Image 1: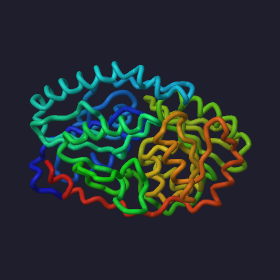
Image 2: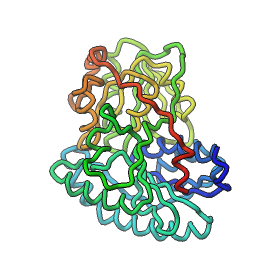
Image 3: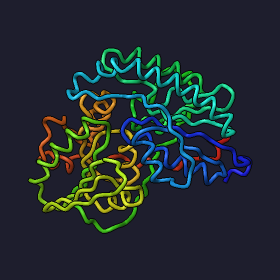
Length: 353
């Protein structure tokens, strides 16, 4: 417990890009509270909705949307992103002005930004969280990485949720040569805990990420799971006001789950079928679960992680269009993700404030 925090107010702002940035901020928000800080949560869209459900008693604020749109065809992902760049830059400018006002209004003493580029102040300690010191964008990786590193340099610290060792999860994404950034490796961050529970499901399907790709994968997998021999729990990753549960033959469908129920369901499931998003990978490490990955089409970072982990003999993967339910039999030929130390020295990290 940090007794020097004097109940300082910390603004924590995750990017609304799927649910990963929001969910990995959950353990940070809890750690802030445990160390006598007062967190204020800021985001937009489903990321903000999710955090409001997790922390109904905390102050939440709405930031402008980056309006990131995914292409239906993965090959067009980069061009769709480039097209939405002017809107995104406008949102970042707006974000900067809003944050400036909030610092005065809410007497904010520090900032934690999870990939929100406009959430920063020169006047108070500002920390940036990312697992991408290098930003993969195919043949433009060098320029996107340089631009990202230029932004990170402004911050007082950069927290990377991985370990700085030969055996690590992010590879080239989270480790750079000749590093001049103020990087601190936290170890994998997860809101999950491993529990010794009896297995209830042979397969857990968990979807995440922005539309339309989340919906396209849902449609594809609903057909595929019909051929699966065993009990399936299928979490669609749609955040709505009420939870909806539906039973169709051997498959139990949920629109979403809050952390406690999700944690229990993970622990009660034998195998997991999911995206290769980095937050999901960290959850699987913590829970010591074997998995099969389907990276989001066109998302270079997820494709890189899936390829890396398959090459290392840890987790198999398939492309979205080629996936067949029979592919899950490959899981047994892979080692599964390594058990890494996930204890974080929050007191030491929070000294930045």
